[in-house]
Amino acid sequence: MSRLLLLVGGAFPVLMFSMAALTVSSFDTALSSISIAFSIALVPGIIENARNRRGWSKQSTVMTASGLLSMGSMFMMLGLTFTGATTIISGVLWSVLAAQAFVYGGK
Image (tube, rainbow, N blue to C red):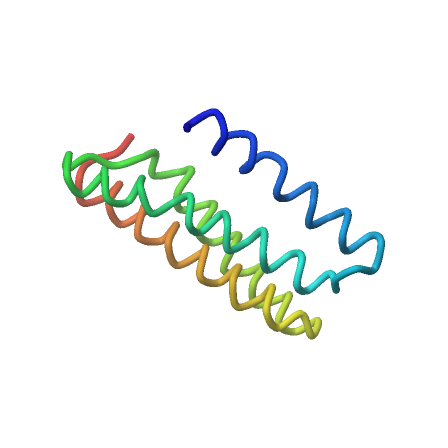
């Protein structure tokens, strides 16, 4: 099962890019779909950190959260509403991971 999930997880962004490039879907739809997948992938890490009371790298989580929140805001300003919203959601989830890094003592 995990190999199938790995294959699907790796193929999904390529599929969405192809659909947007071939104008089967809009770039906003493709980008936001990939961003949703990124957000879903973070949930097990957040749960595991809470259970084990440990944090990820402070620098990595803070930089990623800040970058995603900034990018999401810029996507919104460019009119990519769905991409902006889903990127901001990813940024919020990375902010949770950053908070866990500080609370649980990440490196």
